[in-house]
Image 1 (tube, rainbow, N blue to C red):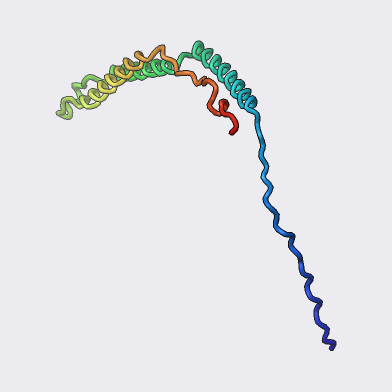
Image 2 (image 1 turned 90 degrees about the vertical axis):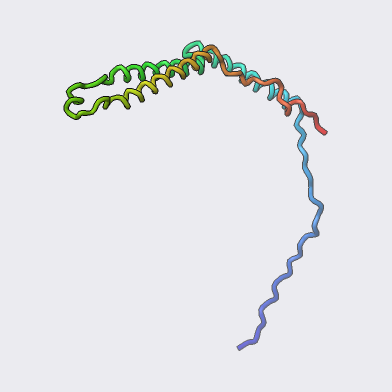
Length: 144
């Protein structure tokens, strides 16, 4: 058996460390200003579409008033449909006013709906404030 030794591993030489390289990109202020102008045009077009929607279906305040009116009508219809009393049941059970709790609840529901409707009517005609902004601060900055 030959006693040959394994070949030594080659030594790897690492390159000497170098100073890091710093890169800097410069974006002209005009690019930011152009973007701000483009955003403003988009916001203005969006505002026109919102106005068109308000003309077609109403403002959010008007939609809320319509819904409050509908709830008022529903509560009134429910309250008017409740029985006022059934003499046969009262005679048979000996209990009077068995419908009184549900009648009171229906009247309370109607009263609450009427208050909500009155509050909603105060807001009719109001429109949300537009989100169109002047030139954003990031479009006014200068490089330091």
